[in-house]
Image (tube, rainbow, N blue to C red):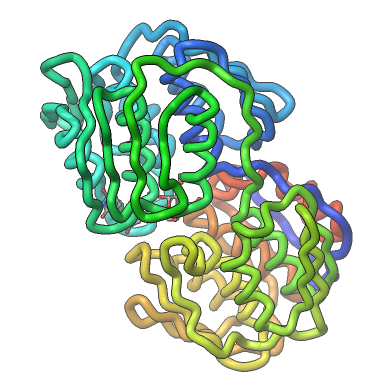
Length: 419
Ligand code: EPU
């Protein structure tokens, strides 16, 4: 099992090009299944989750090749509509193949998806929406068997009880080639949803309202292939900004989607960092010690503060001057990184959805284990600012979301090794 070993206390400085978005690449790779032709996706990050999506596409009979951050997917042939449980368990996004395969063929068999353990993560909204679009769904010893009796899904009016990112993506993927109009009320407004819709429009889909709370889709009989550039990764952006600010350094981050990052940088600015944005660049200069954030940091659906950045910012604020308070409103178990931070000397009290972080003067290195992707990246943030050696195990979680994280950190002057 590999580990990341960090010799902390070095100030990070330099310029870095940001990777493409994982959470945008995944649904777009799935969407390419609907085109029946070749799609070329540029700026795809090379990550284990992306390779999992590629394995699922190949298992369905498509051809997916990957090189130099470009995925070439040919979905002319589909030879099966069943995804094995092993592949389903590799990541959370496997569940959105359900909408795409159903939309294309009128049937599919899947099982519960894997992904980070952040709480119960049910798929009730996904299943209820597929039923509304005409699917009959049976559960049989863990297999979820979906079939549309008429052979073609139809449009529906769907009101989501919560703006779920995955459910919104699944419905869009099912609706773009369905018969008739689909309206999603209370849809997720995350930038990755807009990127998926932009890709689908380039393939000939008729979608409007993405980025707002009501998306309208008019099903088209046929889509076509296209070439598309994936948006930048706003959570990787938050990660590198957190690392540099925690070490009192300076960063120029290029290839950034500045507006999508605003909910994060507007809070980071309150710690006393100077942040300037220009075109697709962010410049950050951090003082010697961060200030605690005075207002409660509440995670909310976009455009609120992103849940994916909660562990990252917390890991930078554990050594800030003063007390910061977090409130996690999206997942019911997303404070698993706090035990590791406490082991490194942080003062954090968790009570239900609230975490109170009293800034300490410094952290010390420790042996810690990543138990989910962003929590693990938070441990990298903490390890870089800590005195001494931090060894992080469980790094397969981190590899699901960060492209060559140790190279990026070393490039900025951090001491980190994969062993
Ligand atoms: N939920 C339900 N029922 C459903 C679907 C969701 O109760 O049918 C609940 C979830 O349990 C959760 C909340 O709704 O409490 C939000 O879940 P959502 O469906 O919005 O999240 P997701 O699609 O599973 C995506 C990202 C996550 C990110 C969340 C929220 C991907 C692959 N994953 O997950 O990213 O945290 O949206 O923004 O896009 C990550 O990248 O590390 C990550 C976990």
